[in-house]
Amino acid sequence: MKKLFIVSAFVFLAACGKKGGESAGDKIITEYGVLKDKLCACADKACADKVKAESDALEERAGKEIGKPTKDQEARFEKIENEVNACAKKFE
Image (cartoon, rainbow, N blue to C red; front, side, top):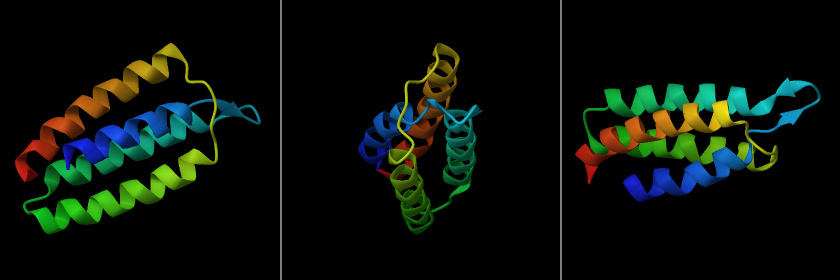
């Protein structure tokens, strides 16, 4: 499970650029944070698998909005990613 979320990290970071004056990256990071909260609240692998499916859908959408992330976005994403990895460990 942890490896799946790590792979997603690269796609999310690639999608953190600005598009049309609005930061697509900030939206993606916020949504990823919500998924992190859902994962950490899971009590079983079935729940974690459901969150993984949501993460895959977000990853697919993020892949269409590729841009260069800011340093702040990278730092925020890294913090969330560390928390995701810690929560994912309980399902390995």
